[in-house]
Structure formats: C-alpha cells, structure tokens
Length: 341
Image (cartoon, rainbow, N blue to C red; front, side, top):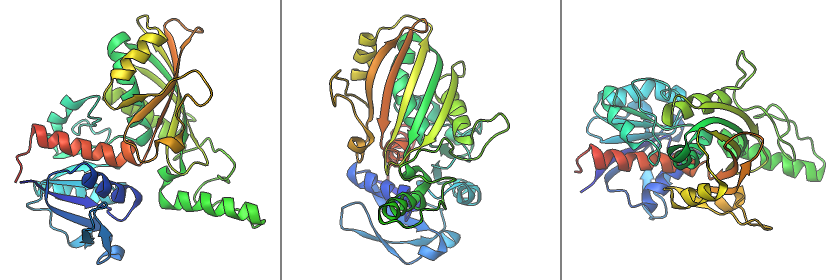
C-alpha cells in the first residue's frame, strides 16, 4: 500500500530528477501522475529507470482530489495558480519554488535540520522546499550550530548553470562550443558570457545592492536554522553544469576546533566529510553529481575572529538542492502524518 503522488513540472530538469529520486528510493506509490504545461500534454516520460512510461497530463485540466501529495517543480507562476487548488482539494503540496518559503504559515523544511517544523503544514496544506544553495549550507551548519552556536555566516557561492534550468545549461554548452570554433558567444539567458567566466549576479538586484538569491540565503537560513544567526552572502554563477559549491566562514559563540568540527560533520546526517590535507583530498562539483550528500572539505580554524572556522561545501543542486530534498520531505510527511493507501 502506498500513496497517490503527483509531480508537477515533470518534464523539466528538477521534475525529471524528482521522478528519478522517487524511483531510486522506492517511495511507496500506488499511483503516480506526471503533470506539466499544455505543450507537453501527451508526451511520455520514464519513471526513473524502472522502464515504466508515464503519459504527461495537462495541469490546466488536472483534478487533485483524492491525491495524497503533489511535488511542484514548475516555478512560482504555476505554483501561485495551482498549489492553492491542490491544497484545497486535500492534496499536500511540496513546492520547490520560492513563492511560499517566507510565508509564516508554510513550513520551510530540510529534513536533516528542522523535521519538527513540518507539523505546521496543516495551516495551508503546503510545505516549501528551500533554495538549492541554502539547503546544502544548512545541512552542513546544523551539527556545528548545535554544538557551539553560530553567530555569523559569511558565504560565497559558486553556483552551476543548472540552477538556471535547461536554458542555462544549453547556453554554457553553446557558448563553449562557439568560442572554440570562433563563432559569436552572445549571452541570452545570463547577463554576461558564462563560458570561461564567472558572473557575480543571480536573480534580480534589490535596493540595498544585494541580489534576490543572496537575500534568499539570508532569510531562509534564519527561518530553517535560527533567526538569531547573522548571514551575508555573495552568490556567483560559474561555468559548471551541475553542482553548487560554497566557501563558508563561520563565527561561533563557543569555542570549537577544526578537529571537533570534523568529528561532528563525520557523524551528521546528510553530510559526507572528505577532508584530507593533500592534493585532491577535497570534493569538487564534478564528483558530487548524482549523489544526495552534502560534501564538506577544507575544514580549518580561522584565526582572524574569535571562535572562527572556514569550510568548503559542495552538493548536487538538482538533488539535495531540489528533487531529493522534496522527496525526503514527502517521506517525512508520510512517516509523521499521512496514512498509506
């Protein structure tokens, strides 16, 4: 006996990854619906590597009544219209967009970090999935915060083009090819050339000079982990296809050594510590693709502040940053609240 599950935005990068993760983790499913925009209606999409093909249904005509949960991966515009409809029909929405993350009546969940907060989902029947860069960071910070109380976080991100969807990945590929053969490489998706370059700009600019991506990391970390933590972020798009990296500097209330931090991270759920002080003794984005862990390397003490640490954090943004976290939320919801079948 299992659940009746809907994946909305099933034909996109994250939607396809959600189907893969549901299949890999053998999520208990009685019935599965792949739903997308009218232009994809009738297309067939594979359910992971099961060999089972799903016919894509039109979101505009889909009835959520009788379905247990819907994983939304179609962006804020779709969520704004259809998430409340699904929720009103009794289907619990797990939304990957940014739309509901800061709604006080919607829990923002990373299961390894704040599982108890999911109990508040009944207020709107909606649960929010955090920003990809926030999700991996809080998984790494949680065990350290529990041990020594983090006062301040300074983070610089190195975010892959898959965070901008298929168009971002296509642009990196096409620009790289064009540069090699001498063709023009004008930007379309990004504000500047992304191939062989880095762009310190993700999402729109705000009045204070930060970007919306940076703002998300600040407010989401506070909501998930602790409202007292001070966070400052610089978010950078880099010419990597999949996998976000972060250089994180931490200041703690209590003393904590690099050795203590390594021990805590080694035992923390969702974290994989790979930290050898030698050539190649760390993880880079290319090695994390397809893995659900948040990898931590380069843990060291920062002597410029009292009780300071620095570390390097890498994760597959389509997995832990989106699809895997959504499925983990679904698993948590099932364990705590929903009856199967």
